[in-house]
Length: 403
Image (cartoon, rainbow, N blue to C red):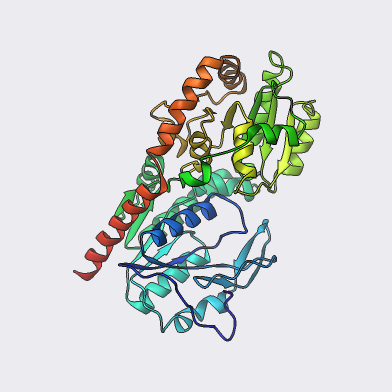
C-alpha cells in the first residue's frame, strides 16, 4: 500500500502477541541483504502469529500491493540511483495516518530517514524502539563518497553510530564482529547478537545442470559462483584478481557473477583489461524462486571476499544447497565461517585465495565432504530459530519499557 494524501487504512491479516511496526529505507524490489533480512524476519514472525507492518519506499516499478506494507513516495538517491529517499513530508504524516492502529514496538532497519521516523513513531505511540545494525558504514561509505578522506568517513560513521544507537531501547546485532565494532565506537546500548538466518525452504532444491545448459557451460567445467549486489563494497574486483591467478593452473575455470549494481560497468572493463572474457560470466539479476538456487548449484564452489558484511547471508544460502564456500573471514562472515564446516577460509590475497580455491575445485572427495557439512551448518542457523530469538528480545525490551 502506498502512502498518499488519503492514507487508506491498513487491513492486517494476522493476530498475535506482538504487533510490530518496522521502518526501513530499503525493501524489495530493491535487492540487497537488508531487504532479504527484513523479508525473512517478517515472514517468520507472521508465521508465528505476530502482526508486522512495514514502512518502506515506493520504487518506480509497480510493486504488488500488500496491505501490511506502507509504500512512501520519494526520489532517487544521487550517489546510488537504485535507492530511494522517502518523502519527509509523507513520513511526518505517519503518526496521524497510523493513529487508529495498535503497535507494541517499532523496529528500525536502516539509519537514514527510517531511523528518525521510527523514533518519532515510537514517541507518538509511547512504545519502545529497537534497531538492527545491518551495515558496517565505516567501510561502506568510503566506496560511495571517495572524495572525502577515509579518516573523515570513519569519524562520521562512528559519530553517527554512537548517537543513533544511544537513541533506541534495544539494538539487534547480526554478528559478533558487529558487536566488537560498536564496542570500539563506545556504544553501550542494550543489545543482543541475533543473525537473520535463512528460510531453508527457499534453498532446499535446485537444478544446477539446467542452469549450466541454459548458459552454455559444459558439465565438466570448473565453476565458481558469486551472488549478491554488484557493488564496490563487495570487493568483486578482488575475485577478478583471483581468477587471473587461477587460470594459470585451471584455464577453463569460470566465475559466474549473479546480481546487478553500480560497479558492473567498471568490473566489465576490468575483465577486458585482465583478458578474462573466457573466465567471467555476468548473468544479471535472478529471481529467488528457481533461478537463484539453480545458479548456486551450478557452482563447484561459492566465492566471497567482501570486507563490509555484517553477516553474509549468501554464504548460508550456498551452504543450505550443499555448495562449498571459499571466502575470506572478515567482519560478519567470520561468524558463519568460524566453525570451519562446509567451507575453506582463504587469505585476503589473490594468489593465496586462488590456491585455496584450486584445492577445492580439484579434489572431488573434499567437495563432497564440505557439501555435507555445509547443509548441516545451514540447518543450525535457520530463520525460524533466529525469529524466536528476536521475539525473546522484543519481550525483554517491552518488559524494560514498562518498568
